[in-house]
Image (cartoon, rainbow, N blue to C red; front, side, top):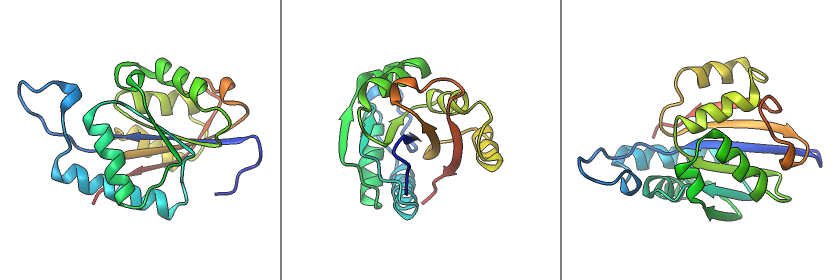
Length: 174
């Protein structure tokens, strides 16, 4: 992907399908076999579309860490991966602030996180701007293994509600 010097890309990746085990702490839930296949398919899609983030901000939850690992097995790449509990425990505003503070000079940043935060952030940042097909995909529910790709021009510190365009939305199935 070719970017102008002030262009930024934010990729929001909802974790893959996780187990539902009574009594198991939410933070400790693992991916199902389907979840691993879907995450690998997401990695292949990211690779195919040349969406290699310089920085991956990943929730500390087991299922998000496993989602990123399986995506890498499928072909995804990320130069630096940071695990941040605020992506697990925070809402859209908290995750947005984490991106603003952590992104630095990176042009392409990915967040591997949870819903409803990922869908709310994608919707809020773009406020209807961008691809109508991508917005239809987002409005359809942003299920597990969904990816939203947003484009933004300017410093990360200025990223805010209504400042980005939703370019792509993809639901990965393996």
